[in-house]
Image (cartoon, rainbow, N blue to C red; front, top):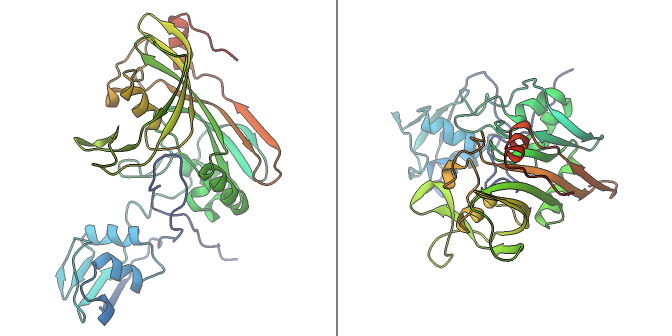
Length: 340
């Protein structure tokens, strides 16, 4: 019996760690093939990657862009490496459909995962700090996606192996993962409608002052001064998206505070950016102004609670993850306890 084709997208999320949909085109396997084509009249003046995607619809645009950048394409006999190169009608293209690191990234890799809840439709994973969720440059394997492919034979038939939202590499805690397409579509809709309750524990610098609960409503986009970071931005001057976080004070200690954070939206690095914007960067979060303390060298953020209506049955699900050892040790060093 032949194996059903995988429909896992090789394109990471376009909108940060808590959003969902991308194209589902599969990538070719290891066999190499050269395709030749002539640019049609309606391709005149169009970007190279757009024309390739239109002429080779069985391959994702991201994969074709990777090939162009790797030097696998010749235009009228000469190499071209820029996907944005503008074409002329009648140009002759030849592209070698070779494997790329991205196309080879989506392979099963067995690893131990803590799974507090699972049924035939979904699983809730307790992700350890240090585990990357989705393959990307610099982390083409050893990710949660690779582990899901190894533990569930149905995962290869789902976009992103059923991943519907993400946590940063060094954030620990709970993620929900779909095991069927119906559950995946329903979970993406719930997240988009803000019907999934996501509660985080955060250790931040500087004792908390002011009201014990605060709603942060501050748009987030790429930091215009450092493209490797996100920042609170003025939407009149810089691109970005609305972002809302609720922060609840739990305790102060000499050098900082313990907070419960609830996501209203899900932007890249949202809690990290919002707390830094308030002057309370996370302990250990060097990217946003935090510093190591009490043995913590990664950002002190833990996705502690995940509550939602089951996407198929509607039954309530409420899962709480215990603190990882490093965060528990840091709290103990400061004499802090976690309220129920």
